[in-house]
Amino acid sequence: MTVVANPGGTVTLPDQSTITAVPAWCDVTVTLTHPGAGDHVQVKVSLPGDTTKWSGRLQALGGSAYQAGNLNGGDTVTAVKNGYVATVTDAGVSQNPADTTWAIKNDGSLNEGLLTDFASRSLHDMTVVAKNVTKTFYGKAATYSYWNGCSTGGRQGYLEAQKYPDDYDGILANAPAVNWDRFAVATIWPAVVFNELDVAPSACEIGAFNTAVVKACDTLDGVKDGIIDDPQDCTWDPRKLVGTTVVCEGKTLTISKAEAEAVRKIWQGPVTRSGKQLWYGPSKGADIASYLANPAQPFIVADLWVKNFVTRNPALDTKNLTYGDFTKLFASSRKQFNSVIGTDDADLRAFRNSGGKLLTWQGQNDQLVPTQGTVDYRKRVERMMGGNTEVNDFYRLFLLPGVDHCAGGTGPQAVDPLGALVTWVEKGRTPATLATATTNADGKAVTRNACPFPQMARYTGHGDTASAASYRCMR
Image (tube, rainbow, N blue to C red; front, side):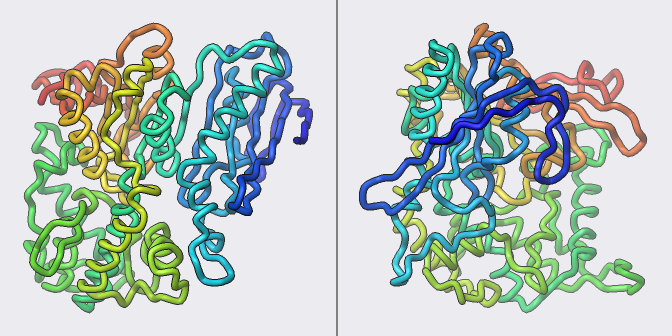
């Protein structure tokens, strides 16, 4: 165990950004090992040094991609500034989100110990350590404990609710990469489609499809704002763009049948050769340029998952997979890893019974984790636990139109969702809506209240379309 005292004030982070007015705090780092795993897992607990600066709350922070948590990130400092004890773990794996070299042992076999740490074990260990350190440091336990994460961090939050229901009073788990054994292969589907159809559309050409689909479906909600509120209502077919021209880097290009078919298949999501749906694709309107097969690699999480986990073949070229290859990889990933990292257990009764609250938001334009995968999980919970009304009592999902993965996009962004969760947990005020806001292209402030699934915010037909007051939650 190591202990480091930090003076606070203005804190400069490794990326040279700064956080001001941070109180002095202590970092306590504990290293854990597990018999037979050959691991060294670090857990860092950051504690406000002055007890008057501590709110009595603990906040655990999640990771991204293949980073279980950032030991030196700004999120921990921000949490301390806001009066929390903050905790994070590296799960014994690399701090580089794109490094999965730890997955394969020298003999070519899967490193099951580290995968277990990354998938689940280190999360509960971190929680136990953080609570014990907090109690020892202050002489009293934290009054409330919260999870806060997005993407991988979102998956980690759902894992906690599913497997360790007593760890946290409130879990904020956004754009959760649940259904990992399916999602992490499904997002390589665009590369497979490009390979099979022998096309390599540029980002500019892909952008033409996005522009066209937004134009076609923007006003389905009664408001023209450059956003598709509910992509599931949009039936526009990309093949309508065949033969049209687009200017890219000074060159006039004609959209081909193969390019349009590729986009259609990507939006449809992965299927078998016989047409059986395997998983979901990105929503219409999401930026799928990151899936370009040439010269870029496919989505890095999927690329590394297939190479270093499913096949244990780092030399595999995932840009040259066929539909048949994909189907086999998808099945192999499910068989090998569903029980390890699937994070798809719909039975949240123990979490509900513990009094826990789960709040999730996800962008409708999430280009990395298919939004409908999260909706699929939510519907499974409803079937397991009695329906939408019963589940909404402890688990609320908000879908944010026009918002990308974890942040960004043209739509209004979530405003203080952690605060909404804290109010729900500590004061019993269920979030009827989730505040969102942005500034549009004209510099005008736009506010909207996101509605709990399956409701959507619909324009009342009168009032300022940029004001949340002009919308109501409807199914």
